[in-house]
Amino acid sequence: DSGVTQTPKHLITATGQRVTLRCSPRSGDLSVYWYQQSLDQGLQFLIQYYNGEERAKGNILERFSAQQFPDLHSELNLSSLELGDSALYFCASSVEAGGNTDTQYFGPGTRLTVL
Amino acid sequence: AQSVTQPDIHITVSEGASLELRCNYSYGATPYLFWYVQSPGQGLQLLLKYFSGDTLVQGIKGFEAEFKRSQSSFNLRKPSVHWSDAAEYFCAVSPLGGATNKLIFGTGTLLAVQP
Image 1 (cartoon, rainbow over the protein chains, first blue to last red):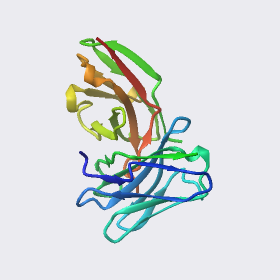
Image 2 (image 1 turned 60 degrees about the vertical axis):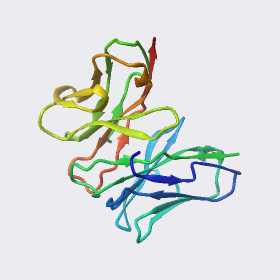
Image 3 (image 1 turned 90 degrees about the vertical axis):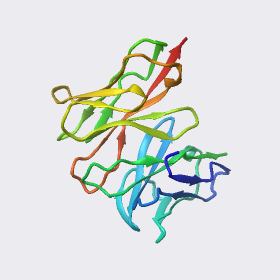
Image 4 (image 1 turned 180 degrees about the horizontal axis):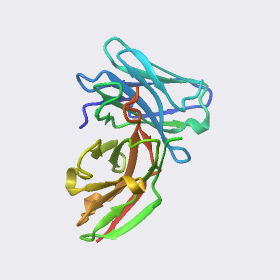
């Protein structure tokens, strides 16, 4: 158990819908990362927040957005869903934002299926 | 652009045999290097990491990895594989001294273990 929790574990929805994925980082970690794992794209970094502020952006679609709340949990919002958005979405957390020997700990993931 | 190459998509070894999984990276300077393992239906677990110093790094579950600067490689090894090692293995890099610790992953190597 990494200490990172993600809900829900599974999510099935239809095209055009909007969903919210939730992540709670390990106690004491200020940084949250979101990754997408799909068959065609592999594991891709989407976005990072540090202490409530966006820190880095990767291959995140405009239909996707995220935020980190004062209690440090984070939510990833996916809207106007398409079949290709079906994937496993991981959240990871670490103490710092960058520039050091920090380690990221991953949650169990949320499996999103878009029908 | 930063990239990670894992040339072997799928490897099968016999239980008790030795294992080497290959990883090459492309980056302007030596980045932070990681190996993660993903068991079926599970999240990612850190096996080991290299930041600096001794180029032979020991990790959990009996794994080790050797950093070779001249070859831009960070290969993962285990002297004797157990059936429970069957999983997917990901090599990853993170920018050195950057503003973010985001991870860039390779495409993964799926390890099957024969009895």
